[in-house]
Length: 287
Image (cartoon, rainbow, N blue to C red; front, side):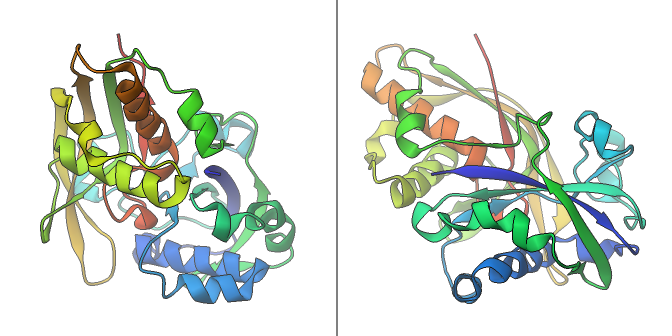
């Protein structure tokens, strides 16, 4: 079943800026999984499909008691004036209260991981580059929008067969695979075919390609951002809000399937490179 966990951690030493990039967090995730199941950790290093998504490391300006009111994602310095994000242009200091969201998408791979992860990871320090980290606890109760679990069947059953407006708020930049290149443009096909393919891969409930046909763009309020994802590569993604609408004449069964994909995006994100912290979304209620 799709499941999202939040890991609270505190660095014992400063985390240099260059080690906040997605590929370093990906390595930390693999180390955590290997601590529970070494064979799975090794297998994930060679998988061509990423059955998990990661958020960027997030920093709270206060203690963990008030962390949920101070959620900040990491972005490049040049974006600071137009976002609410912090710690984008400097290292994370020792003692900062941080949290990090992990989502599992594949029951077959991760069914025994989440229940054992907290117990195993609390036994030892971890490293993000040269920085030594301590995991303090998992999933505080006051962060409901970022944690949770649901079976794929529940996501489908709970999906509306009447809501025809879908609004995504991009909490981290998103990029999309279009033909043989990457693009920051969130077209209907780029967003919903990506969700559909991921859903089909893990859910066991296969949706045909034509379910996206009645979807069209309604409103966009987006901007592009450039951010590094590794030592040698930067990407241009989009941030903001985008709303799609489903045609009035659409069969309720098709509407339900589209809304099931929308609900799934809370775990799987949208676009590509979601294992590097891209494409984290909130689904916003619209009339």
